Image 1 (tube, rainbow, N blue to C red):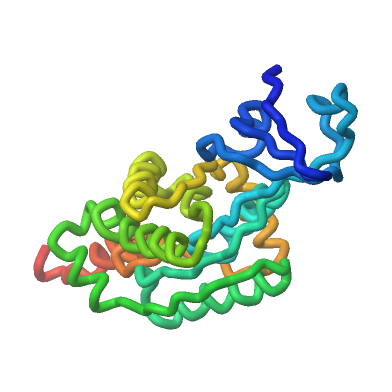
Image 2: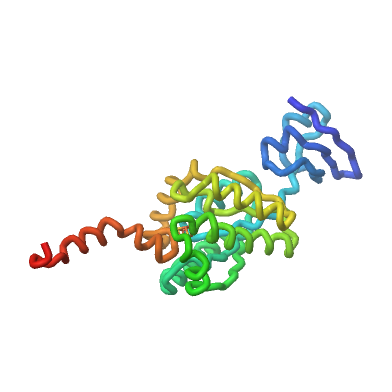
Length: 247
Ligand code: SF4
């Protein structure tokens, strides 16, 4: 076990290069952490220190919808981190779908006492203009950078230590590509990206969301994903509309 270097300032304790705690709690680069005496800790017990609290990072979490936020909020809170939720999803269409997901998140945030920042931007025209030349690669080339970039920018401008995203919970997203986008915008805006593989809790989160009767969407968000969602049905319908005279 690594013993951290510690210094005392009155009843404050400062731990430098907190490798042991760092691995346990979060994956930011080592930084000074101010600790008060309130929770038991085995590593410091032998030094007569029985209680500590970690000063946790101020975290902004891009949030795509209420159901995906369930496990992310729960697991971060278990770590001791309270995320601020950040709604920025100009990729969700049509407007009624956008509004339904946004309003469901508003209600859920209120219910669980989470702070929610709404960055309003219903962007059908702009989204389509930016993806139409390469629809198959729209997620990685435009949708992720647009949403995560705005999140990182807001985090930097408003004094957050780091950002993350609920998109990391979905096994249907392009997880590895998403990580690369997050790392890129973190570098660009000079703010930390907190990575968690939330996918381990996807089923659990979805089950809880159903129990809570949250609105469960049927497709990722853009009109192209809606078409993909119903691709088989569309193909069946089209097959059924071929007139006998044409066959
Ligand atoms: S499928 Fe989802 S992630 Fe990909 S572009 Fe559409 S809304 Fe964005």
